[in-house]
Amino acid sequence: MIAQHTPGPWGVRPGHGCYDINAGLIYVAETIGGMSGNYGSEEANACLIAAAPDLLAALEMTDLGLHNADERGPCLCSQCAFRQAARAAIVKAKGGA
Ligand SMILES: [Zn+2]
Image (cartoon, rainbow, N blue to C red; front, side):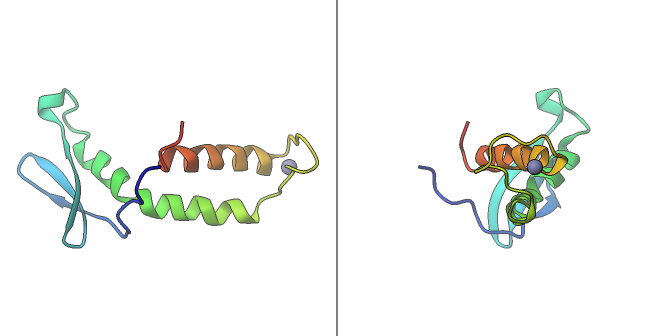
């Protein structure tokens, strides 16, 4: 079992050739571009990472309101397809496969 993530909200601040992701005074991560061959994407990557707690919370809330066909077998409706994708993303975000 992995530990819980740092509670949000997370923000982005420009650093020295990088972008820092912070939760208030807590340093969460840093994105770099030039040295990794990913130059130009570091700000967008930082924004995506900083949105992670909000995205996870939104997916968890959305999941509750969708059609739940688990007890009745497979369903091909768009809500069930989204629910399946949302659940996979939630598992990945929490350290699952
Ligand atoms: Zn369905």
